[in-house]
Amino acid sequence: MDVLIWIGAAVSLIGVAGLAWCIWMALRARNSGLPDEEIRSALQKVVIYNMGALGVSALGLMLVVLGIFLR
Image (cartoon, rainbow, N blue to C red; front, side, top):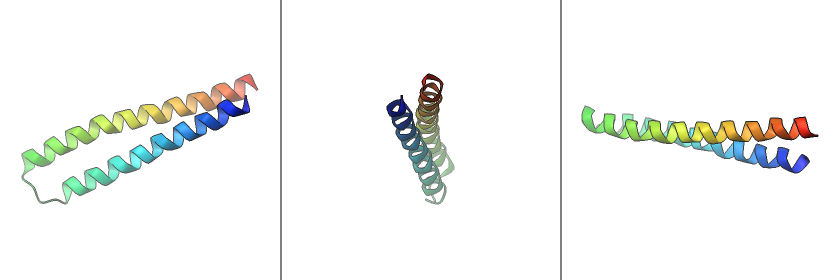
């Protein structure tokens, strides 16, 4: 089950990279100088991606724990 642990770690790292991308997108939107409504719209899109990245990261951590239990 070592393979499951490594796959879970890779999936979790993809999720963490997605979270970092969301932070970068939110900072870019905040510093863009656009009107408030456009910034709010951009941040609402970032929230959706943020939840997806958080879910991917959590799924990867679940795979790691499952691999450890089955070891």
